[in-house]
Length: 350
Ligand SMILES: Nc1ncnc2c1ncn2[C@@H]1O[C@H](COP(=O)(O)OP(=O)(O)OP(=O)(O)O)[C@@H](O)[C@H]1O
Ligand SMILES: [Mg+2]
Image (tube, rainbow, N blue to C red; front, side):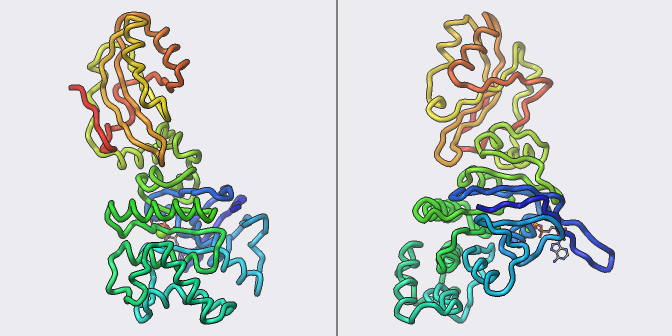
């Protein structure tokens, strides 16, 4: 649906050219919720502005739905822009317009519908985002979450194929963030809209995205399905983002625990199997749990434990765990990469 090929972007100032993006290759599939995560200044907003054609790349190509957009002009550019909805961190509502008239605004600009058709469409959009009772209110009379719902309804007004969300939940509290992320997932599911979500929070990625790209200093440093990036982050920047999402509590010092140190990852239905006890009995091994995290990635349950295995037949136990679909990693050195979780439950053995 969206492709970036070797895209670079530099901004020129009196100090000379400052590169903001270096050779970005990205591909977002139709109907996907794709996350782009990175620290402040990583280039996230620059990247979305290239997708919604507010900026042109210094080099490289951007294509949307199979069309190279980098050299579109005039009416074609207009039409393409209209097929891309945008949701902003600070909502960007017009304070002098009611909720209904904010949502009507892009329809008025497009100039293709009658007044009655616009009214009907606005009513349907407000129903979709759960704001039918607030149509006549002004933005100042709404909560942050309600304002963002207006922003989402407005972004959907011209039936876009793509929705770009730049830090859409960053101004909201955690509960409201959850509700807005649920709404975006519902829209993705019901309307098939492809969503690109920009965020600095791994929590947003975990809850809502199918795939993720990690951006650092204008480069994609890691990319993949959220389950693998979240459970097995490879790049130090990704690890730091996961650790931040999981809280700062330190693990038990694993070098103090005797035995073979393993990290076990269970996902899907496997997360609920009573496997460890059976393995311990079958292979005569004992284990101490050193740390771990349990939670969901979107709707997929996962459990990840660091254990120290002693006695019995360790390598046969590892083989049996792998055969049961568990990802088994041998932990080298002093401590596993992650602090245990704030995610839903927490395990500590001291
Ligand atoms: N219009 C511009 N002119 C000059 N430099 C710019 C411009 N827009 C962005 N930059 C620079 O490009 C880099 C990336 O900025 P960008 O806004 O894309 O980062 P970001 O990841 O969205 O950060 P944040 O999380 O703070 O929003 C920064 O170094 C920024 O200063
Ligand atoms: Mg930004």
